[in-house]
Amino acid sequence: MKKSAAIFLGLAMVLSLAACGTSSSNETSAPETSTSTASSETQEPEATPESTEPAESTEEPSSQPETEDEAGGTLVVYYSATGNTEQVANYIADITGGDLFELEPVEPYTSDDLDWTNDNSRVSQEYYDESLRDVELVADTVENWDSYDTVFIGYPIWWGIAAWPTDGFVEANDFTGKTVIPFCTSSSSGLGESGQLLAELAGTGDWQEGMRFRSSASEADVQEWIDSLSLS
Image 1 (cartoon, rainbow, N blue to C red):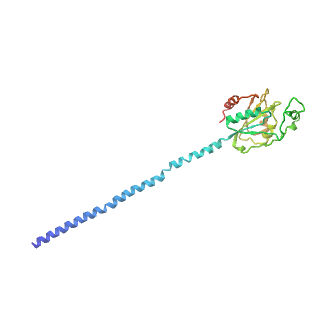
Image 2 (image 1 turned 120 degrees about the horizontal axis):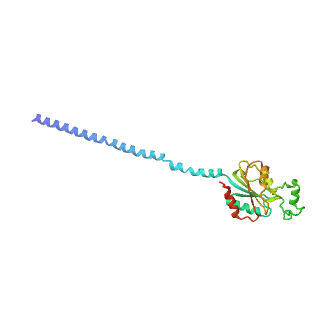
């Protein structure tokens, strides 16, 4: 009996140890599972910084102002004796979105000065004596001159050429790299060689043929001409 009890007790101890071993093995597998889960979660934050496409795309609009600057601006320069050329210049500026710059003689011309039928008037004397045509201007240079790619130059026609107060501005500026478009107003005379003579006086710039407008030119007349130029 004692021998049988000893054998039974031994078997009981073996079974007990086996059960403990199984329980211990199940507990050690839990950290592996939790470690695996933690590893998959840490991959999501790592992926987030890589999604920088929105930040890169927001930089693209910032280049648009630079493109506009590179396109250059339009300047409308004019001398107007009686207001006719000024009116056309205003139309051009409105249509093109250009800036206006008026040429003003330090000593303005009066109505008597402009009486070309009087041989003793100022313009008549200046016509007969070219040395008198050096008309001093209030200003002959423009701020931000380099920012303009297209320059319109307007004037009335005096004795078949551009009114000479325009000459001082043309001589004072470098038109290199600029498209220069002359325009004039006249009751009867055409553009003639006025634009070509100004181009020769300047010596620089890409001078276009230009346009003559009657004294009572309308905005529609100017619009039609601007459209024919195919300006960018």
